[in-house]
Every structure is written in structure tokens, then in C-alpha cells.
Image 1: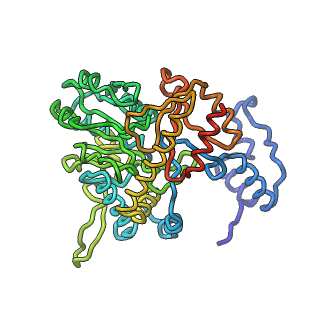
Image 2: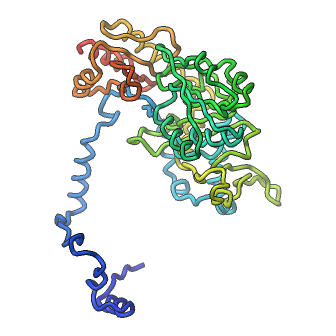
Image 3: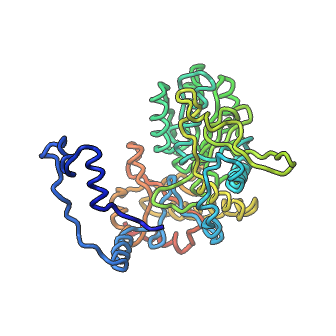
Length: 445
């Protein structure tokens, strides 16, 4: 198909139709002082020159391919099998139509259904939706659901939940006239059980815990569900899905809702996105789940078929009566997670979890022997932990970054009381040589 630009005759005809003599007449209502008198643009470059310029800009970025990264805190470097991006790049996945018309979208609906099934099994929950934009969104939606379900106005959240998650949760609930109350954590990073129990009153509609929490600590949530349910509240657990190959799943803790960030399931760090928020629930809440839900049924010929179920499209445009204003999902990212989990299988995800445990514990042990640095030896961890230093973290970072090492996250930015403390992460991507190099670099600070 040819592209035909406007001709002078076309312009004259349109101006005549609207009663304007020339284009400048259309600008008469714009004050002279705010008009732009032309834009200074450089001359056009060739495709080759433009590509070189973009590549030069790209080289200014620091990626985990060129640097040794011990960053964690919600975005993690993990190994992604080569088969995953190859399968994800198939045209039928990249160009799939939004699955409102089931007869035209069987492939997309099936991949969503498979993703939901895997998340449900991984979290030990009854049902999963088709995903949300990110983990913080999933938590906010879970908070809204829980408070509306219980008819209460207050939500308790552990201060050890990811700070960004708590900020998004606060924004959502504040707009809905709900109240968020936080309870603290001890020096070892574990939540204060006595403080939590004291705040758990009949006014509380839901409580939120994260395990492993933002400080890397694996929380002991034994009997929390019974305590929460005895007060008539719902129990929400934020989890790292990759840890569930070796740690207890939210459903095994008695959670009503399980949410979290799915970036660890086969998605690169990607400068912070797009990511994937997973959302799973118990059977009693299935009709309250926000977002899409794909189901499997049979057509009139008895053949297997996939459809969007329980909620019609109109459900999401019912304004204040809708369960959520978010009616879409991260379909391609969810497919990436589905492919990743399928490639690993039950055994593989356990092995990856064990590798993370091994790497983090080795690094933690090495740092515990380093003069001027302290780590907690009691609290259980998965793949990240807190390091306290006699040297300010800003000084550590300024010395290590030029050496090609990203040493971790400054916790003082999120918890002002944690001065000279930083969060270190070691996943399966780190070798013994990598970690020894990091320890030697810290020793020279």
C-alpha cells in the first residue's frame, strides 16, 4: 500500500472547508509569547550512523553482563535457559490478540491457563489469575480485596515488606479511605511478634507478611493464620516464587492470598520492567479476584476449549462497582514465567533454590570473617542478607563500582535507623571466584 502525503490542494480544500485562509489563522488563539518559532534539529543521519550513535549511548549503561552484581531487593539476576527467549519470540505469541474472543484466541487462553495452573501449584493455593503489572500492584489489589471482603478499614503490614510494595499499597488504600498500620522488625530482621499481636484487633481486615522479607530473612509464620483468622481477618503472604522450590509455600502457611513479583521466573532485570505480578487465592475468594481468569471447558463437540471465566469483560468497566480498575495482565511476561517453570520442572526449581541457598550462605560465611563487617548468624535466609559495616556504604560503593562490582543496596535509604547497613544478594549466577573477589574488594575498603 502506497503512502500519499497531503498535497497543497488537499490543504487548501481543508482550510476552505473550516473557513480559514491559511494555517496561521488556526493559531490565532495562541498568544504570541508562548508560540514556538521553529525547532532546531540536526541534519538527518544515515541508518548506519544512527545505529552507531545508539550503540554508543547503550555502552554507557552498566549491565550485569559487564559488572559483578550483588544487587537484589526485588530485581534479581538469574540464569535463563536459552530455549525460553527463543520460544517467547515466536510470532504467534508476540502478535497474539487480546483474548476477549475465545474462538480467535485459543492459544493465548491456553498459555494463560497453563501459567495459572503452575502458579497455583507453586504457591499451594487454589486459584491464580492471569497476572498483574508487577508485584506491588498485586499486593495493592490483594489489600483492597481483603478489606472489601471483611468490611473493615484497617490493614496491618510488616515493615519488613518491600518498601516499594508498601508505598504502592499505601497509595491504593489511602485513595479508598482505608488505613495502613505497620509493625516493626527486630535487629535480626524478623518481625516483632508481640507488637504484631498487640495491633491485631477486631478492626483489622487483613495482615501482610513477606517471606523471605526485604531484608532477606525467611520469616517463621507458624500459627499466624490461626491468630489472624481468629480475629476475622484475612492473611496475605508476599513470596519470592523461586524460593518455593525449597521453602514452605503461602498455602502451607494457611494464607488466603499469595502475591509477589514474578521477575525471578525467567525475566531479565530489564532496567526495572516490564515485570510480572502473580496473584493467587483460596477457593472462597475466587469470585472476588481482580483481573483476568482463564478457564478450561468443553465445546459443543466435546473438545477441550479455553475461555475467560467467572468475569465478563463488562465487569471491568463498572466504575465504582468493579472489583478492580485493572482488567489486563502481563501476558507475554506470564508466558515467559510459564516457559521457565516448564523447562525447570519440579526437580529443577528445587535445584535452583538449593543453589541460591548455597551461594548466599557461602558468601555470608566469608563476610562474617571479615574485619569491620558484621552479619547475623541466626536468622534464616534464602539468597540475600544484611551486612553491617564500620565503613559508610557510600564509600564502599565509590571504591567498588570502578572495579566493576555493584556491592548491594544501601538500606539507610529505606530504613534511616540502619546506618552503614547494606543488602547483599548472591544467586545461582555467582561462582566461588566471583564471591571471593567481592570479599577481597570489601577487605580493602
